[in-house]
Image (cartoon, rainbow, N blue to C red; front, top):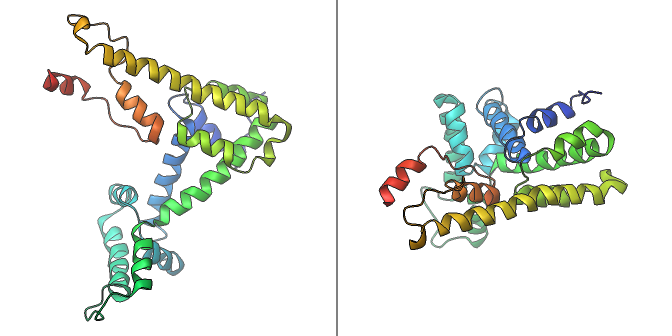
Length: 242
């Protein structure tokens, strides 16, 4: 029996097959990149999309992604209309004698808003519902799910709190398996970070028994935040600290 391939399950299967890191983080990264490419590509000149991006803007993470994935002219055109709208609505050339409280509240909302963040939140919730449905209906997917390295803290919460109707009687089994993937890795991190700290103790002077814990700081941050810090410079950092 093979995994059911349809328009909904293909993205899920794609991100679960590597069995490396948190699969839901990979799902988020895939959705973010697709949206950033879309915004700086075919959607750039769509009036309905431009109205939304002018009103909502983007967070730093997604601005950086748009600059990295899109053409500079595309980003400049998006910024041109967004900056113009901010100027007209919040900081006009001739400002009023005192700040308007409603406008200041709206500006605060804009500063903390992001077009892509909103979209990803909605799409991730939809993807979780598909994961639930596949868990119930596809034994091979349940096996693939159980073979994941871990589920990060943020996505443990998401998987267990998005509408669970699709799980039905399988809710308890899904909760236990997701807890195993999240909690088991958490306990491993606790042990690894403890070992890392013990290696800096005077009693470990001369020992080189790191037992694979040199990257435990980066792995712990990935688990807690869903963001991956590159580990290719660990050796250089250790040399500087010595």
